[in-house]
Length: 227
Image: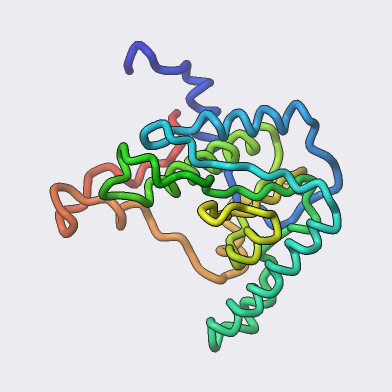
């Protein structure tokens, strides 16, 4: 164990937040206190970013009419997604995939404008701006779980319509609608598994040594929480 390691109790808390994080769609009545929301945004802003570009932008939606307009955009794309799924269309439409009208807080996360001026780390991998924003969202997700709040990432929307609705510059791009708030419970499995839409695969299938088709790495099937 390195000299900079957290205590055993602190490590358990970190791994517990990771293991119990869920993409939440069902929310309970209640609010998110302003100080808690501030902590969650600070956690997101503390995320790593390539070249320290900090490409994230957070838009808090407090206007109810605007929330309903965002919901309309999501609902339209939900129908389009169902059509694209062919024989699974009806099954998909029965799933609850968002809580835009139910959650205490609604946030839109976007890639900010002016990203092209950042070359460090992006010359051959320009998508690292999206990777950085994803890290910020994950930070918020884990912090929300630690605060006893649920969060859901909604990606079912037309980016152009949502960007226009929120007055984003042409070189900005929305990447997530985040539903945040109290929830009735935290399921012990992902919602899509509970709904039998799909099932997660074991870690062993995703780790190899010394090449894409190399031998599976040893000891990758361990539980996420240390003793």
